[in-house]
Image 1: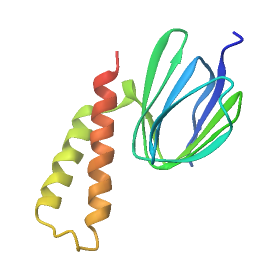
Image 2: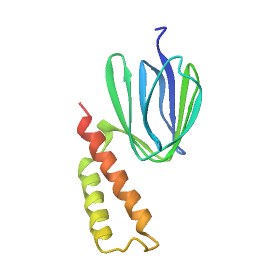
Image 3: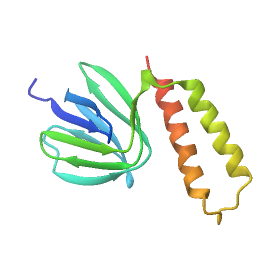
Length: 136
């Protein structure tokens, strides 16, 4: 299809997705943004969150960790620490991780050396739960 955009989602372990899509929505550190074929080239850092795209009229969701996106007029390359397709997420495990992180944060001061690591773990667990809830 002429309006398709190629995307590649790459983690250190694997290529999580590679294919043509109609559009993609990306959790940038400066805010969520969408990309269609013909988009102006850009490079963006990514925030922990939900990346989604439309393929064959169906929206797919991935919980992603921090990373980078390179956008050209016909391709988007996503380089992230982790990318988990929404229908592959273990909701029970994600909920336990969220509960653990919330409990640990409640006992910490923001000046604690591990505070930001635990906060990031909480954000990852929330992103995983939100992505799993969007799975069909």
